[in-house]
Image 1 (spheres, helix red, strand yellow):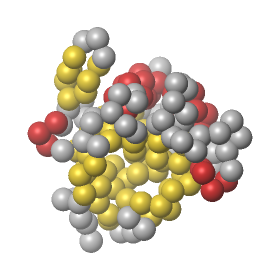
Image 2: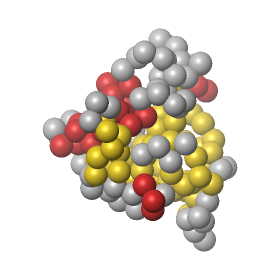
Image 3: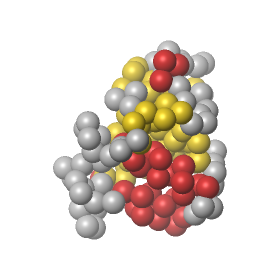
Length: 153
């Protein structure tokens, strides 16, 4: 059963390979920047091809016991590039969430405890990366995607 109309949240999402990266954080924490950086990393072949699902606002649903993320159609294909404004780019309407990145996370540590590296959303257990304020999230996400079994696509 699919719930594509699900809960709307303030987040961005990018499909990388066959899984989506859900990017959460307070306003101004760099969600759009990380989304665009992932798209560029995919183009540079550091990670599998990456395509925007949604920037700033997405909807969460559940399909077959897995968490899904869906573009909000009014914002589909739009991404904020700081210094350039709102730009249009390719997008996919949905993806299955395989990783959650929390920016400006209060529990971010140099050597995080195993429980900090997972989260549960809508009853789905997911890998998580807590990123400290001011830290660069892209290297952490790329490292997780290229070294952690189950995140490699």
